[in-house]
Length: 253
Image 1 (spheres, rainbow, N blue to C red):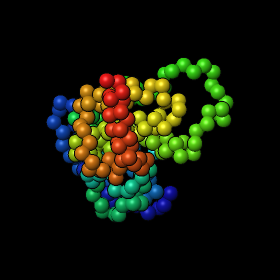
Image 2 (image 1 turned 180 degrees about the horizontal axis):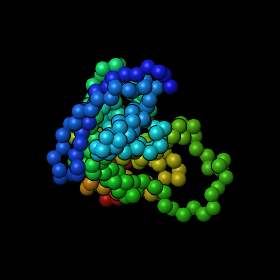
Image 3 (image 1 turned 45 degrees about the vertical axis):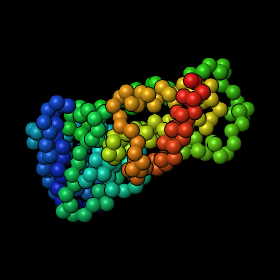
């Protein structure tokens, strides 16, 4: 690591529970190494706070490789921070300057109740997946990889949609708190694969209806979701979801 040190001022949201009042609390870090990741900087802060007998800041994380989607933070009003295609865990302190002030908040959405400080409950997204984001048809033993032809166009689109890490940034950035980009990506991924065909109609109806039931808003085409997505999922996923939904309803009825 570099021997250079920076002073960084932090304004971090502190809230004991969903129904407790919250506030921004000021912290100053005088020994931030530019080579630290953003989460390492928060670890360093918490180590200092605990050594001083103070309560640490609760934040969520897991893989720290931009894969799991757990590092759900809003930095200076932007989900995952100011750099495109970058999850918070991939952000490094060298992107900031000595003396900078950073405001750190949790995801803001009715469907994401705060558990504590920067940690929110994202189980609503899990329930959308449980409603139909899977293939349950028993096809017997796994076939050879080359026995089920899938053309390059559809396989690449399916792969692009499958890159969604389910972080919820799209929901936090949307003025309506819509989960349409997340849900659309999961629906469109399987719609482009033959394995998803048997449950295609049921899947889209169940997942879209569950999204509304969970309290997520509807899409108004602001495209804020696409702008903050660390996996760069295109809003064409939303268009595909809508077409799938309308087609499924017309065929079911």
